[in-house]
Every structure is written in C-alpha cells, then in structure tokens.
Image 1 (cartoon, rainbow, N blue to C red):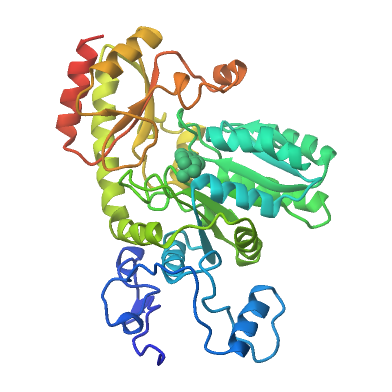
Image 2: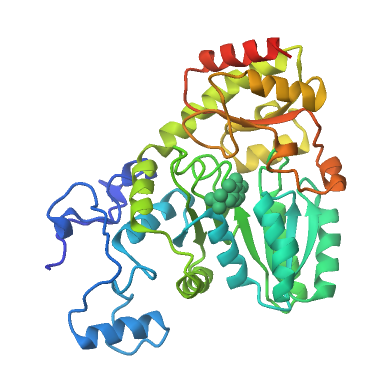
Length: 430
Ligand SMILES: *Cc1c(COP(=O)(O)O)cnc(C)c1O
C-alpha cells in the first residue's frame, strides 16, 4: 500500500496547536489505509502477513532490541498480542491529553498496574506508596508482590513532606527504592497526594541512591485525563483504569500506562511477555469513548456540584467529602488548585444512622443504581465499608476516616434535578 498522503498525525493548523478534543477524531489513523473509511475498522485478526521473510526478521529484531542498520524505526504489525492497528491508534490518542511520550493499553486497570509495577520494581527492590489505594492495588503491593521479593513501605496519602521523607528513609533501609506509587484523589475519601512534593522526594531518594531516582507512578483514574495531568507535575508514568471515566459507559474493562518512553519500553515488553494486552474490539470502543470524554466529564462535574450542594444542606447527611468543599486557603485546597482543574464527580458522604441508615437509603433509591465502579454515564452508588473496602484493616479504616454510614456516589450525566429528586425521596425513608 502506498504511504498515506494526508498527514494523519496532525497536531497544529495555521500555527495553532490542536486541542486533544479535536485530535480524538483523527489522530493516528489514516482513512487512506482502510478503504477511506472515516472510522477505523475493527481489525479482528490474530496475526499479520509479512511482505517478505526479511521484513519479518527485521520486525522481530526491532521488537527484541536487536535492531540492525537498515531496519525500520519501529516494528511493524506482527501478532495481536504485541500490536494491532486498533491498539496503536488508541495508544497514540491516549498520549495527547496527558502529554505522555508513549502509551500502552491493557486488558484491565489491574493489568496495567501489575505489569507496570513488575516491569519497574525488580526483586530485592522496594515500592514506596501512598495509602489508601484502590483495593486491588493495595492487595497487589502488600500481599502479592512480596512473594516475588518486592517489599513495600507506605505513607498516608495526605501526609506532609517530613512524614513522607521518614517513610522514604525507612524504605531505603530495606533496599533500593525503584518506584513511588500514588493515587490522588483517594477513593472514597478524596484525600490528596501532593504530586509536586512527591517529585521532590523522588529526586532526594535519587541523590541518596547514586543518581538512581525511583519512577513516580500515579494512578490518574479519578480526575484524568480531562481534569488532572500529573506528567506536567513531574510524574514519570500514569496508570489508568479505562473502565471508569475514559470508557465512560460501564460497558468495558480496560487499562493503560503512559509516560516516559524509556520506562514504557520496559512496560510494553513485559506486556508482550505475560499477555496483559487489550483486544481490538475493546480498543475500538475506547476510541469512540475518547471522542466524548471531555463532554461527559464536564457534564458529570457540573452535575456533581449540584448534587453535593444539595447533600451538604440535607439534615440527614453529614461529611460530604467533595473536592469543591475544601477549606479555602487550607493545604489540601492549595494542592487541589495546583494539580487539578475541577472537583470531578465521585465523592462520599455519610448518611445519619450508621450502616443501617446507609442501607435504608441505598435500598430506597430508584434512579441512582446500586453498584460498584464509577465514571459511567449513569449515577452509581455503593457502600464501600461492606463492599469495595470491606477487606481494609480496621486501623487503616480509622486513619482514613471511614465511617459506617459512608456511601460513595459517582455522578453521571442524567438531569441533575432528577438525581436530586431521587436522593431526596430516598433520604426521606431513613
Ligand atoms: C477501578 C480502578 C482500578 C482497577 O481497574 P480495573 O479496570 O477494574 O482493573 C484501579 N485504580 C482505580 C483508582 C480504580 O478506580
């Protein structure tokens, strides 16, 4: 096939830099290569034909890091566990919002997180991490990775620099610190990790480790890619559950890692080895989702503000942990202002009457759906204490401010007044 004439990685027009919202409809895909189809077809194929035996050999040399003179810059299409057109276009588009050098997609958020951590933290090394993290990630770091000789030290998400440095010193006593892993805001209490401070800590550890700084990895699922871009604050790698806001319709499971290309090469190579890759059909669905991610996230953010304000005034509700309600001038408000563009649409609040009150409220809802997960077009609510966070040890629950009546809500894009009407009638039952 001839080379595409149209520049299909266009990033500017008439001296103006194109926005990600514009590029989501075109970047990385050439209609000319697919019968001029406006949308990328789904490439349902396991393998790809080589033009010649020599071309096949060159692709495998490039992928295996044995590039010779005259070989292509990057390996062409070979086998769908390594690469596939839908995967490649999706990965190219994902880099744009977050200003990442490279991206790789995975079969789930946990696939992205486990592959990233295993690629960056070898046996004998230490992962320094904030807590609380997504439940699956806590289990991976605290219970699974030690079986592979990777140790961990934690610090509380909202900790200030001195406390984090104490944890860092403790970690360095156990072995080389190869990764600092954080998630901000935390789920479900919306505590914030100061990402600029974490970059400083990573650099300080690097000085103590003979120039070997740990990779700063940030789970950006809650506010990214529209409302928070941690690479701009010094993160090396971002991980995502694309299942949530990016997918956005509660109809798929997927994940991504993105960031520095030297680190991404290791992550991508491990993905090829252990097979945590994404399938082409889900990749195609995610390209469709990316076209509306800004519209959806903005609408959900607006709705969440209205619902949070309603809840804050309601006599049967306490402690609305919504990022829009941070005390002006407080440390957390300053961090939020520095690293995020909006409050997002997932937050928690307490229903009076403890777990019994919360359960009565949840059972009375008729529009809002009772389910775990978040970031979809529909509003979802759950009781973390008995579901997603049931396994968290009681001491940590206490430290993180979990309470028996706490529910977590992820606001969707319905009419916010309908949501308020439903929540109001359900609270009346409590
Ligand atoms: C859901 C979630 C994950 C895990 O993603 P899956 O796609 O379910 O594997 C990781 N981190 C955060 C913050 C999440 O919300």
